[in-house]
Image 1 (cartoon, rainbow, N blue to C red):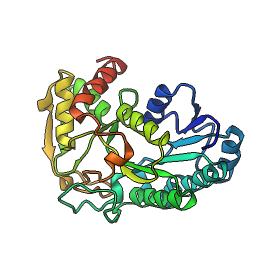
Image 2: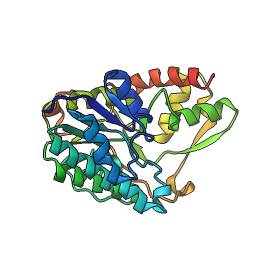
Image 3: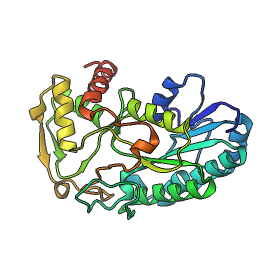
Length: 285
């Protein structure tokens, strides 16, 4: 492995912030330092730093907008990831990047594992799958961490939106027929660092333990925050159409957890408490 610093790209986002907090000596690159839409600049920036490990947290994450901007999403989530992976291979550095439950079609009834066939049903999922394939093609030692439903105490996300709107007296409808794994950014960050500093390669699924629906995640969040959980009512996906189709079932399991050395992450409900505490302070609830 190369002898250089850890580099975190997308350090301004919720996952990048969590990793940078755990690795304060890392070189934290925000979008102003490294714009993945400018693929040609990636090699120059990374070679200047000479990392031993690159953890790519930068991504195009606007799932609905990607339906109209699939080309841009594919550049950021696909081509740029391939470029970073190629540079890491040239430098003898480890490379970790993140993908999504949205690479699956949502038709399963059992949790998806790493070896299950992919079949994304929206542009965002397709763009992330391009990134997976390019990352592994350009650097055989690269790691693709598939995760889902990431929330944090530090940034705007689904949980903060629920807390903010209900605290303002709003009544909300939230879909109850999409099921997945909430993942707490700080837990994912710890796991990603351990994986990056280890020796595994290929695809691995990492989420908090347990699965739920968006509706139940909203209700649990409000209950922890001592807000009125009855302000949220269930609705179906058909009641709330969005530009991008979401998979109905995108629960992730893993056949590689032992190999990864990270063990099981805490139950999502347990780690959600810290998210709520942080968001309550952040939102002045």
